[in-house]
Image (cartoon, rainbow, N blue to C red; front, side, top):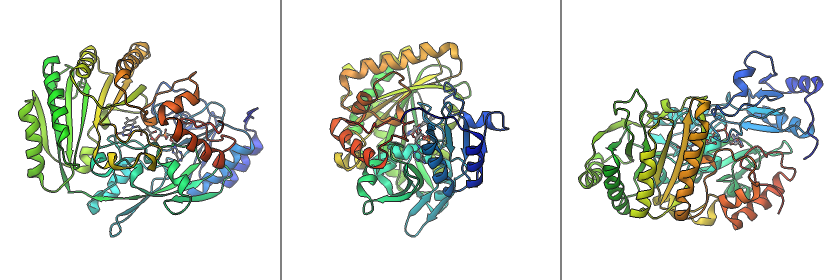
Length: 468
Ligand code: FAD
């Protein structure tokens, strides 16, 4: 696409006639809030923000962007770390108003509108004793999370959020709606389970839900100081080798915020979630880890699913400054542990953190070529994330994230997760996409992109360019 145009009054009037939602222009009440996304480092001034009022509003906005050669940002929950949910001098399609979730408890099927957050979906499914596997911070959007993959507390028993998709309704670059599932447009369905927002605007997602106890046995074992971190990581590595699928665990390393009762020292926290009714079995499994690496503190108790899913929310308010990087790895031996512990000790501030997700289970049994999501054989996935408030800290926090990612490069086993990637302006999109998907999957994604979006209208994302 070339020669991007401006949005003139006539076009705005036409758009206002066509959509049920609101068209916000610079200077309008609410424009300033509507132009912002979760990552406070991203400052953009769109020509207009269209807050969709119904699913039918999506088509006119897509057509308006295409016909007027306006850059188009598509926003679900707005959590994209690279800030792709807003744009200078273009259109933002804000789906925040479309948050309806319909649950069919008998069939265990959940239909979700594209502005729903994880909290919206959990609130609708929990009363039926059901959950859809998603992520761990409930204000995240279902749309962006699912189109990229979606790691969380049910990844080992049930796979990624994308693995639990049954179908997606998608508005294409031409403004028409198609359904993608295993039986309808299966190649498109393949691409939507990890390929991000490259192929169109999802107007609804249909998921398979799983049964979940009213309370899940979950909690955190906490360790202080490099010596205890080393023991904990060694014990966790051994423990994760023999775990049943129903136990998912994630290590988080951070300086706890002032409101937490853990003091201001850097802490290594082994969080876990046991997704079965039989809590005694969960307790026995966690006790094995506790014996091997006695924690310095712990909070371990059954919790309602929605409570556990939102326990970390307060750490991530809208407007924090953010830069993230991630890598998969398989080895967690003394050499790798030494790198991790050194970086953990360096992190004396509250404002960066890192998580190590233990994978395998259902995630690992999905055949590699069944979705574009990279590296199903990875044992662990590391997400290094900055979330600070003061612009004066930008360089130091970004350097920490980059430095740690560089340290881990020798141990990386391939692929990157697009949803844990910050903005990398200036980096060649093709080589970035190769580093995410690998060359073979990227070729398949490019072919799909050429079919559905040859002009690259949907390019404000982790972009797959429709060129070889
Ligand atoms: P948005 O910024 O609204 O959208 C992200 C991108 O998705 C858009 O730029 C667009 O390209 C595309 N998109 C959005 N809606 C649509 C649509 N309807 N149709 C087509 N394309 C669309 N990820 C995990 O896997 N697990 C986690 O536990 C997790 N925790 C997180 C916690 C925080 C605090 C944050 C900030 C992020 C977290 N993430 C996690 C990453 C998260 O998955 C991504 O940030 C994701 O992009 C968020 O989706 P969104 O809809 O909120 O974002």
